[in-house]
Amino acid sequence: MPIGEFDGAAAMPSTSGGVLSAPLYWLYEMGHAALDPSRRLADATRLFFRNPGNPLAHTTYGKSMAAAAEVFERTTRIYGKPEWGIDDTVVGGERVPVHIHAVWERPFCRLLHFERNFERAPRRPQPKVLIVAPLSGHYATLLRGTVEAFLPNHEVYITEWRNARNVPLAEGKFDLDDYIDYVISMLHMLQGDCHVVAVCQPAVPVLAAVSVMEGNDDPYVPHSMTLMGGPIDTRVRPTAVNKLAEDKDIDWFRRNVITKVPFPHPGFMRDVYPGFLQLTGFMSMNLDRHVEAHRSLFTHLVKGDGDSAQKHREFYDEYLAVMDLSAEFYLQTVNTVFIRHALPKGEMTHRGLPVDPGKIRRVALMTVEGEHDDISGVGQTEATHALCPNIPAEDKVHYVQPGVGHYGVFNGSRFRAEIQPRIADFMLSHNGGIGGGKKRNAEAAE
Image (cartoon, rainbow, N blue to C red; front, side):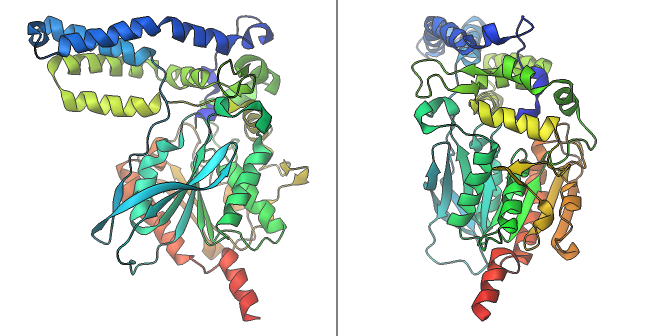
């Protein structure tokens, strides 16, 4: 979970950090702009040495020049939000088109619906699933594989969080309380006839949102809640990033990673945890691996190994695309989840009122962890079960996937073959049986 990768945060030279943190974003933008002529020259060089009409394009020298130019251009550009690239899916052996459109929107998020256009409605039930994507640095497209796995047998919705630097200051702040309100509003829009899946960081706010709804006897609670690799209780088998969070106080994070959005972005002067600092943290954790990957890209380009080069491009187009986080949300999350451990201690609040998972009784619970997860350690998500004693035992499931790390919990071959089918079966077994559907059916019977 990138929000927990504190070791990569760019610390300031001074002890206070405040003097340099304010213009940090401005200096980054100036440096990127200064490199723009060099990038353009590199791109022109790449095209020149790849032109089939150029005799040098067929030599090792020409291929090396083109490869070097591409590597330079790719390592110095700013990557924008990737496209979903999901145009169709297979339902019951039939390929059907998929249209993506927003069905709910707020300043910091919109809810996307992957609408499948059937000629004939499938006989198999198609439960609605609300996937809450992490707001921790990368765009929601990081869960492209997750969406693709659910599409054949589910009506899929996913949160698409907005880059905070694109949200005007006039739209107000966005913090963890707002995040919880957003989740509740989405569940109301879906009228509770759905299953919610929280991937990584959203595990805490989703659990809090369902707790608040149950405490208010809300009829629109979901049928089930699946939490995947989430930091519910980071005191359990703490990872390196968890320990680093405990070594710092919240003022350290405020001084060292918060800066203001520069002109001319729409969010000018908004306090954010900028994407480029997050990316520094992501890459510094495995710097040797990333350097080797780019060296391999150069080699693949020189050798003409187009398939390997394209796989590199696809991975890093996604990995290097990062977004700014609202400072209020980031700091409140770090303090609540990683420093104070407020939720498992029973000290978490929402709008000043206690968050009590013990009130959850109508929502089935499934937790999923990866055996080798080095971000959310094994047991941190499972801790949810102890916090929810009033969910019947037959409506609780915990699963640990052997042989996968954090990313493998929600993507990859083992997710598709072993994790997603288990989640799908869990949803089917509780589709309308409990949750909001159960309450509404009971009221109708009366």
